[in-house]
Amino acid sequence: MSERESFSVEQYHNRTVKEMQPDEQPREKLMRYGAESLSDAELLAILLRTGTKKLNVIETSRALLNQFDGLHNLVRKNWKSLKVIPGIANVKAITLEAAFELARRIQVAGMGEEVQITSPEDVNAYFGPKLRHLTKETFIVAFLNPNKILTGSHNISSGGQTSTIVEPAEVMRQAVLNEANSIILIHNHPSGNNKASSADIQLTKRLAKCGKLFGIPVDDHVIIAGYKFVSLRSEKLF
Image (cartoon, rainbow, N blue to C red; front, side, top):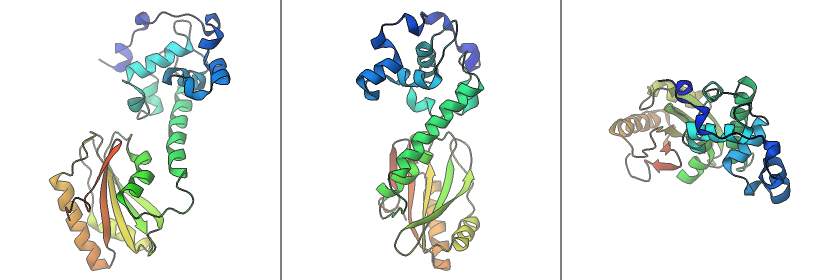
């Protein structure tokens, strides 16, 4: 059964926003009490602006949250998936995806123009917002200069929910092209399990050996799983 087929408006008791008390109306509530006083559904309602004849904008927002089991899963969806709820057409769906992406970029922007990476925490702070909500496993190589300043990164591959194909030759090629002094390997586990698999460990060891041959050491391999992460260097796995 598709998500659209599984959705029903019968569980929602609709009334227009205008029929609500001023303290219940999202925009008025934000102006009076601040954005932090609003629920997830109320904040989404401000972005959506309008509902439908069957669902007002707040209940449309609640329906979205219920359909995808909360905000954490909702932000992982692309705009096409968001159209499962009646009344969420292209413009509203695109607005939501743009807002989610902007929120991720704001998290990264807090690190400033020049990003120095000297710990797994730094890796997670910069790459976590980019990777934690992805539904496919994605492998990235980050390039550092002698001062451990991030000079760039490259998406090596994207696969399924449990694995992705990584060619060591391509990783080293990108490191050389980007004149990296050292590199950091990063990939995500969409499952939320931050434990390194045997395949993760073997790949890291292979890349570390290649790095030695090229004179470009692998500083670390960090796995990001939702809001958790693990450093293979810290775990002494290579």
